[in-house]
Amino acid sequence: MSDEHYDVVVVGGGIHGAGVAQAAAAAGYSVLVLEQTALASGTSSRSSKLIHGGLRYLESAQFALVRECLHERELLLKLAPELVQRRQFYIPVYRHTSRRPWQIRAGLSLYATLSGMSGSATFRTIPRQSWTELDGLRTDGLQTVFQYWDAQTDDAELTKAVMRSAVELGARLCAPAVFRSATLTNNACDIAYEDAGQTKSCRAKVVINAAGPWVNSVLENFLPHQTGLDVDLVQGAHILLNGQITHGIYYMEAPSDRRAVFVMPWKNRVLVGTTETGFHNDPAHVHALESEVQYLLETLRFYFPVYKNTTSKDVVSEFAGLRVLLAGNQLAFKRPRETVLHVDRSLAPRLLTIYGGKLTAYRATARKVMQRIERSLPERRAVADTARLPLKPA
Ligand SMILES: Cc1cc2nc3c(=O)[nH]c(=O)nc-3n(C[C@H](O)[C@H](O)[C@H](O)COP(=O)(O)OP(=O)(O)OC[C@H]3O[C@@H](n4cnc5c(N)ncnc54)[C@H](O)[C@@H]3O)c2cc1C
Image 1: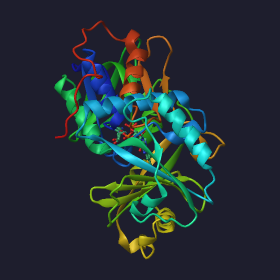
Image 2: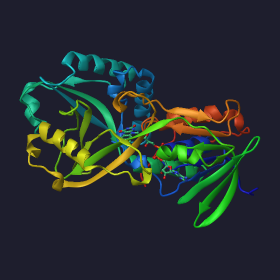
Image 3: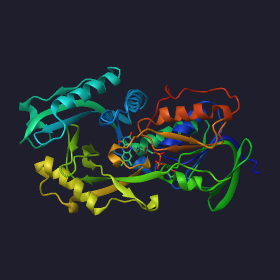
Image 4: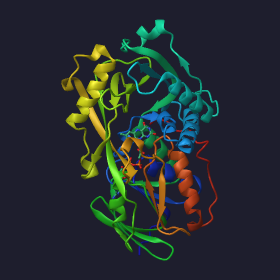
């Protein structure tokens, strides 16, 4: 048994690990975070970088998720103004677009209602005479352009800012440090991890498995044996190109399969994403495939004729991240995106695993995690409220 004791040990330094560390430290608990590579080195630096409600989730009636994300968006705009910025989003509707203008209007009205009519709730159509000002957007066949508001962030910087806040509240971060194994005892958990080539051990009242696409590999190293949930890993790629998009973020329908693809300004370049491709390898080796690069280029060229000669040679960089979706027969695009919290036992859990989730809702997820493990932890005095803690860039 180790001399190092913590209330909560978190495996994973992505947005969920950082969010739980911040929430636990704010609630007065002692916290250790183990991150095998570097903060935000997994999915949390490979997202579409949007802080949004997820307009398209309304079609699959995921209202609770959308409302929660919209609430978190407003909070993050206040808590992290240098890291999360409001952006204009455009939805062009063409003769060939599968959703009709009345459907988009209905969706945006519901989106505005679910956001509690916050400052970001308004939407409008762009007058026809102003279409030519929209970054060279294709206008033949164009019927309507809607404009609404959501937000954009730097996902890796946001994760680091949340972790810094956790550390300021007393959490300890060990990175690089690899979780190796754990044994659940009656009311605690003995953990072995590797730090700077040395095997170390510690004891925790609760372990939070926030290992993103690695969650089930982490679970495999628990004794007694733990049964996780069946998941599919689905990769999403982005490409970054030289060029300028200045007006906002364009929400397009990919011509080949009608999926949503975003064309966004990103650090004075153009970011296009994303895709959905089944993934069956080691998460450490995820990368954008040539077929994904071609799919994204094709969408960009189709809607922005100014990029008609753009080829993969013009791609400055590309990246891919992995969605963790509960296994199912539906197309990945239509699967629920709600976060699932899985525990080793319902009363006083010693181990909680986070499956899936949204960058936008990390704080709400962390709050739910803390509620779920409350009975496993001793009484402590809260020192802060994460809904009031400002988040600052380094
Ligand atoms: C393509 C794509 C686009 C997305 N776009 C958006 C978006 O625009 N907006 C939004 O809100 N959400 C978006 N999401 C969702 C969001 O990005 C993810 O839900 C979130 O980043 C997941 O964070 P995480 O902390 O669970 O996982 P990760 O960020 O993957 O973190 C897990 C961490 O665990 C570490 N780890 C693994 N095993 C071990 C071990 N044994 N020991 C120590 N550490 C370990 C890894 O190194 C990693 O850093 C997107 C997701 C994808 C895939």
